[in-house]
Every structure is written in C-alpha cells, then in structure tokens.
Image 1 (cartoon, rainbow, N blue to C red):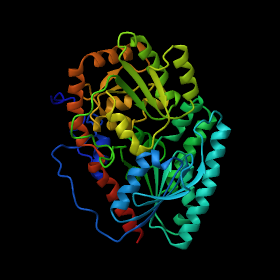
Image 2: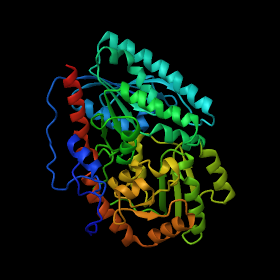
Image 3: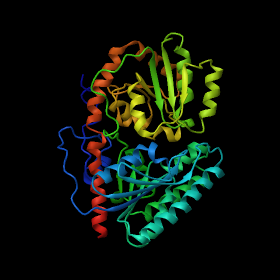
Image 4: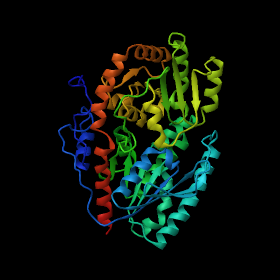
Length: 438
C-alpha cells in the first residue's frame, strides 16, 4: 500500500544547500526527498583530508558521530575522534578505519547541574589539549565538533586560529535541552545565558549543522545566518542497519522494544504504565528496554511497583553495531516521548532505525514527528496519554496485518531517506569548507 496522496512527507527535494533553503521557506511543504532524484554513486574527488571530531559521547554507541566518521574514512580521509570512555574499552583504538581516542570516563547519571557542568568542563580541557597538540604536530584540514554542549566548539580554538574550518554540529538544541533536563524556565537568566552562548559558538564556527528543520528555524531566529546553517538529519546507515534477507526464527514471545537513553522526556514511564494496562490481555508479550540514563532507577522502581518483573525487562546499553540485531528480533517498536518542551521538537533516529529494520513503530504525536511522518508510516498515539498508548499497543499486537502495512510503507520511505542518500549533503559541505580553506 502506498502512502495516501497529499499526506506523505517525502515529496520535496533536499539534497543541496539551495534546496534546503527553499524548503525552509515553503512551510506548507514537508522537507523530504524527491523520489525522482538521481542519487550520485561516485566518491568525492580530491586529496585525502586530515579530519578531527570531538564529541562528549560514547563513540561506539552514537550512531550520528560514528556515521560521519566512518563515511569520511571510507572516502579515504584520515579521521581522529576524541570521545568518552565507557567501561573498560581501550583508551586508543582503530574502529573501521577511524582512530578513536577515549579521553574521559562518564556515568550517565547526572542529577545536579554542578556534576553535569563539571564533567563537561573536564572533557573540554582534555579535548582542547589533545586537539591543539595534534594540530600543531600536523595541521587538521577540518574539525567537526558535536554538541551538546555548544561551547565544546572551543576545543578547536588553535586550529581555528590557524585557519582551519570548524563545524559545530548541534545534535540537541542546548537552551531547550537544559531546561528540559533540569526543569529551568525559559524566562530564567540561565536560559538567556545559554542562548547567548549558542550565538557566540555559532559565530566562532565556520558552519553549523542542526539535526532537524524545526530547530533550524529556531537557530535562524536567534543565533545564525541562513547561509551558515544546514540540516543533516540523523538517518540510519545501511552499512549497520540492514535487515536480514531470509525469514527470522519464530519466537514464543511477542517483543515490544525501546532502545535508547533513559531520560524523563523520553516517556518510558508512560510506556511502562501503558503496557501494565494490557499485560493481562496479552500474556505472551513482553516489553524490553535497552539503555542507560538518570531515569533508570525510577523506572526499575516503577516496574517493581506494578508487578511487571519478567514482563518489562531492563537491559544494559548496547554498542551501536549490536542494536540492529536487537531491533530485528523484536515485533513492535515504541518511541513514547513526552510532548512538553524539549521532547516535542527532538527528532528521534530510533524511528528511522525501526523502519530500516522492518519493524513497525508506535510514536508519540510530537510536533517534530508529525512534521516528518504520517499515519501510513507510523502509528501515532496522543503524547502523554498512557490509555491511548495502551490501546495502540494492544491493537498492533493483535493485528499483524496492520503491522505489515506499516512496515511496507515505512520501508519505501526510509529507502529514500537513509544515510546512503543523505551522506552527500555532508560530503559536499566538507568539500566546500576545505576547498575554501586551501
């Protein structure tokens, strides 16, 4: 079944800077790829580049950073990544052609603003030293810094002063992210300070990448000029997220799945309470959650209080390359974000990953997800409404034909919007910036 005419969100070109600027001006048109577009298949010509990435994240679990780095490495460039240290992984390691340096350990459990800021400042100091020292030994052609936080871009101060272009890649828009994480009002002084910091960091950078079109409009209104800001969406890399060709082994249990960070705005408590409402009606179904974050302990308490031990199962966070197998061995994805504040506009790559792995997905009707998807692609529920989510869960569990219809439509959609298509926007940007610097 094809998406309904006039409602599908993938009929508009978005493969060049000019096309993206035009899209932003046409508010009535959804910003997805033109299905008639011919996708380039050749690699970008030019000399191999020396590229540095800095990210306050676990590289092996962050699909966005890994996807950029491995794409550049496959193009023949030398890529170094400075990131966080999870567990007992080596301090230095080459992964798929990318040199990964793990500078600092981290537990994703910050409950106070001070602990959050202190860890980030420590990482900023370490990354500033390493980037500066490496650049002075052999100059980088490009530095790509991933936010949050925005001010991590100043780890590239020495290369920037030497004329090297610097990309600031804003995964999560910091003022709204901070307010959502710590319950701070947008009328507060700290919000204004963060907006000022955003403007300063955007001015320092040569170019700003933002993760979705709603946030691009926000940045244009307060921090950056139109020609200096591009959208690169968090699309799945088919080198990692590719479903098996043959039939999967049959399972005794029906698995609902959430893989990702465990923060309040992700709405996992809503999903657990929704599952509790239907668990007796579907005794053959379980809800599996993979991830880490500050909400983990409260979620474990909720599971116990609802008597769902063994039915709602909490797993440790997986490496990115382990996630596709986890998704493929599930029957129904759940992305239950809250619609308040940050969650309402934060695009979740999990939705596209479920689509790429041919698993139907239930999605909160947030502003951002309504912007990109429609009812033929995902099953929407009213964000925050556990009764509505429970109804959607039960309906899709009991009706496999509805799941198959969603999978068929979503598979066509994601094929036109995965990283194999979108990577050329990023490679063109890298080529333009480095050519200008030569």
